[in-house]
Image (cartoon, helix red, strand yellow):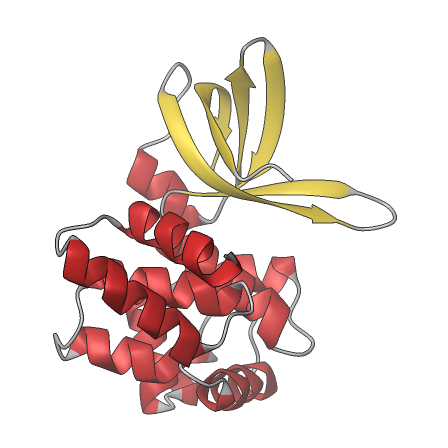
Length: 198
């Protein structure tokens, strides 16, 4: 599995990049949000969080500027029935992650269905199935209310996306945050994974 990619952009298009990593050119499909955030241009050094999606007919590498974008992508394709990578990328290209989270928490199907390629029924399914997933909207609401730090909320969502229960994830993260309150999202995820697997 390719989880991260750092290299120089050889070719840049709004929905895909060719990234040179030590002489190997990787084609990476990116949402518009990532393209805009990186100001992707030929010759630019980029660091992408990635997901390799494997099907019988193709191996496709998806890239994201942040853990948060990748987590939402994984949550959509893993936890919402009928949502594949193309629709998940349309969601990320159609609105900022923070706005998407707010729409799910508020049940705003109308705004979600304005995203190109996302009909009303699909938007309803996203809201219904993500609201029903234990911990997802609870974590988003806690982060929005300032009850948990953004890095702790992102780490918790990443662990939930990996299939860990919210209660176990939260306990592991709380222990890590007690020891190091200013820990980054990545160090929290690594530490929690060690604790949860140990």
